[in-house]
Image (cartoon, rainbow over all chains, first blue to last red; front, side):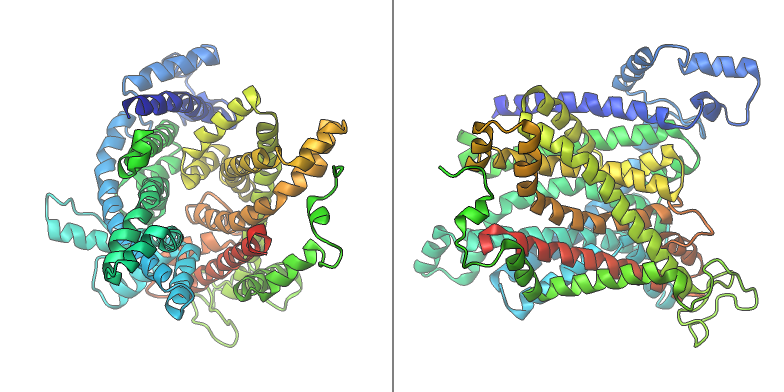
Length: 314
Length: 294
């Protein structure tokens, strides 16, 4: 188990190095001299020279890269040109907000996606199955930012049930915090629920025809026990992996969701950074998300091993 | 020993219909796929016919008809500066479909050859290509597209390039896996045995046999790419105003939800329908092309 884990970590390292190279080279996509972008309106030669030194723009590119990586390893991803705050601090500040959104969305996604998948697999070929599939496919096809806009229109503007935007930290007022986050989490959660439902369904379909499910039925166990205990438990393993992989969709979805509901989280940070031409922040965010994704992948692999004893021994 | 011929032709006696016909027949029976096809064709036709349809100019403002509700004169209403929403939707279809098709085109043209190289030759070529693919796949699709679009600068062309690059690793990974399965088949083996040059093996034997799953993936990715373009335009990183695009229409519309909800309604429905079309089409193609279910 430990050996497997270490091997997986070793494989992840070159990937992370490549990502860092890619993120670093993003700034060379900028049209023209990056210095002029950094300097903004400033054209004083002395200031330009100072900035050039500060950002090591006189050094050869490989040296610049190594310096950047060296700093990144020490948790220094540069400073925001806009607020002069360290990028790491900015990200750490916004992360809990997005984490709350992500957790609440996942609850929605799991609560809708998994039961729907089980029922639809169990009733394969019936109207219920067909309806669940239509809803799931629609969920995949509706742009979630539009769903958000429509919900604001109905729930906040017309019925005035929930706030349309903003953020209340859970420490301040837990109930208000959940209320504000309810709609965004639903919007983001339904998109994931569709993916989860489709995977649960196909995973369950594979398991429901297996020998041990037939044996369980032959033993005279109730359908409930057969489906939930014997079939679903075995269908669960690929679903756990998938849930970890949904991390990427969750972060990407958060960008638009936070934009619509004006939630001051990680996603809003990305968009603001893009518009303020705050490139160090954009780079930092891409790097952090990618590394996060790799870590989630590793965890998913580990969970897979733990859930499947046959793999654990191998 | 059968020399290098199409494996399906060898396996099937003459009495059976040609594989293309069989696929088409199966596809036609697939009702939801046909619905998808109809939706896609509908949007393609109105996008192509946009210049000839009797609609208002998409950028023509009319200050005497600002934010008017849908009526006989403006079926889908007018926007905040009196432009006809229907006309902008129809012209916006052009931007959306173009973005979907061009970006997937980029991804296929770059991704498939790289995937074939990695899968067929293996070794260090594979190692380099695969590691780069994994690295790019670690960045969520939309985040990558936003970052690229941000650095390239906001425009429809750059959005297409950004989405195309973001989708490329999907095609590299898929093609590579398919090639690895196909290259050990007997017919590839025999092509090599009779001394065909590698270039011919790759284009005549490998490529046609890995094409079906790539076609399915491409269709489904057009759906993803259209949503991605709408998202980028919504954020202001795609099509620039005043040129019409569904995403940027929604961006403006969210400020007028109370006064002019139709501004937000129709662009969203259009995105939904066209994306649904490509998703249904892709699912149907997958079923029709799946050799296990013949």
